[in-house]
Length: 400
Image (cartoon, rainbow, N blue to C red; front, side, top):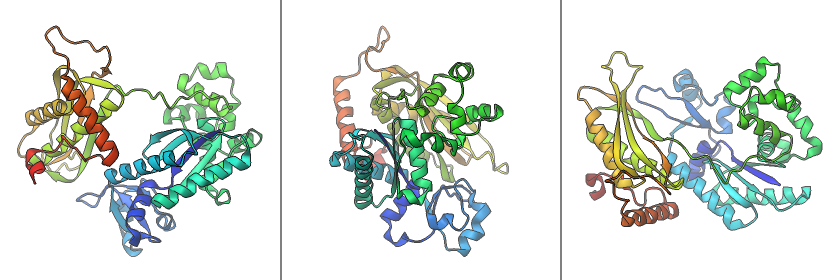
């Protein structure tokens, strides 16, 4: 039986878990900025009870936040990745869930070796309790015959208190569950496909399941058909063979606009190092490093500038120092004085498989010592934290 684990209001839960004084208080996590802007990314149940919702701009609810003493926490992705990794490791040590895989920072999938409903609920409850006890992060669990149906089960576990955080969706109650589920809440149905289905008068997951396969194949891709099959109880998704990214990007909208080249360079170094690590995770190499830089387009009272540049590498690589050096070079070619910059980022493109990569006639294979260094770096960062070894640091920062 497939198991889905979803962390409840993950960003907000992480803040409460690491700051005990926030327990029971209305808390929101937001990408706040110097103008009081930004949007709410996550919030606790206490904040939801005030009428606050995810996606609302902060400036629209500033008075409500002030009147109710709502705590605003700036988003901290490093913290969330660390806690996510802790959850992953704790579940693996518990040795209840098999084929365990992390799908996103706050979602996990696996299987449980049983078909007995009572045993399945018992095992899922043990996992749920262990995560809460070891990390203070509340989670919801769904179990069913496919990954997609397990996600459906989690939807009900999260939204209906009677399930106590664990919902088992069996074939005999699948039709009713899908009949009550809006097609917009089905994993794998994107905005465009949702619009197509609404236009056809299909509004629930069960109405989608009732469609003819040949008809759906004429308007949907293989991914859409796999979602249809999974809702009918046929496993079609292999999360252990994720699709490799054809481009990898790391960027940030600055909390405060900056014209300081050294500050922006430090960010670019960090982004480039992060991209290189992701590249190695999928066992790929890249040939081009793109860097972009932009002012705040919403501040028309300020001078505007946006530009990007691509650095073509001598040979395909996933070597962090090489990619960082190229990114910094690109930044220096883009940077102009007299502008306040709001966003910067790094994109790796021309990505190919690491094995069997084609080199130019005069290119040399990547030094084996560099490969081993990157392997050691990734292993240490995985074990002790993302920034244990960070090639993105400038010399000045590293010496401080």
